[in-house]
Length: 304
Ligand code: CP
Ligand code: NVA
Image (cartoon, rainbow, N blue to C red; front, side):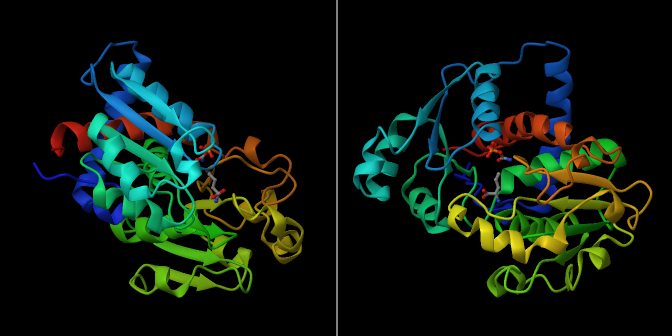
């Protein structure tokens, strides 16, 4: 079978993404029933983190252990990655010893360059441009609570960032409509919108996006690497908070998601995570199950 990577959602077909969401739900049931399923005995996952993480690290590492394999955490602080060894050389070496690799980094080109030299599947665990693993968990969560996301209306409220870009691709892959409300100057870059006019609409206010939505999603105003813009962004995004009043404009059974970590009092109200529509804790847990399904797909069905 040909080597497959997961750098963006478009690396898989819609049918393959559906298959992973279904499998994630089965794996969740197995895990909740304490059933041991260890298809990865002796397999090793490399986890390269150039940015911080709680959910991604814990879910990949726990998932690999539950599958009977193991994981190695690699940070630039204590590997040669932080001392300028070219990413291509690192990819050749690391992928000659491991079975699968996940990378969280800055420029999306870094993961593309790694994947181009890798002998094993590479998973994008967040770049400046995309966060596709989070979308697997988000869609799984929607499906578990409301059934199919096809033909639904999703509102993205906030920054046109990596999560927003992955939502744009998700709209295309899963067939839902995406309304994006971002402040002027913070919309997704045209290159991430250009193929998706059929499913994406830019609207001019959070209220307009929220109206009749089946799912409202937001994210931090300043992503990792943008910390010095925090104050300017707080001003620019002041009208884009997701709160209880905004939720009243959406469909009565609208869900609320946030990839976390969240900043209460900024992109969400103090109490938004406790709102009846919020499914953020299920969403976070589903990172584990969705990524197990993804690793199983890449390693057992499509590896070298
Ligand atoms: N949502 C998410 O990716 O969280 P972490 O940054 O904690 O991994
Ligand atoms: N947009 C956020 C997502 C964190 C999971 C960031 O890149 O920091």
